[in-house]
Image (cartoon, rainbow, N blue to C red; front, side, top):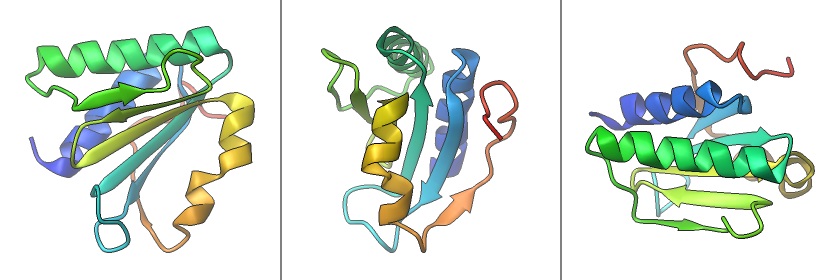
Length: 121
């Protein structure tokens, strides 16, 4: 699975658990630790945990293990490291506060297949 397909699959799995406003940022030329940053949020910490658990479990079933999960205890901001794709799942107020999209304003956005399930737009 190439990096863009992996990122889109991660976004699709997050959407399946009603993740809100998934965004994929191509940061290969802007960042040294990954190629794509996937960002979404949940409306509660319980939903954040459900999104993370679902994505991690399903990706593992598909042969793509993660290198680690951080922040799942309080579930305000959980990071799942898949190497070339890093998933950030925020509790809704934390996403606006940390504004990761604003850190990489020059990053190209990779189209997410179907944002309708959880989009605020």
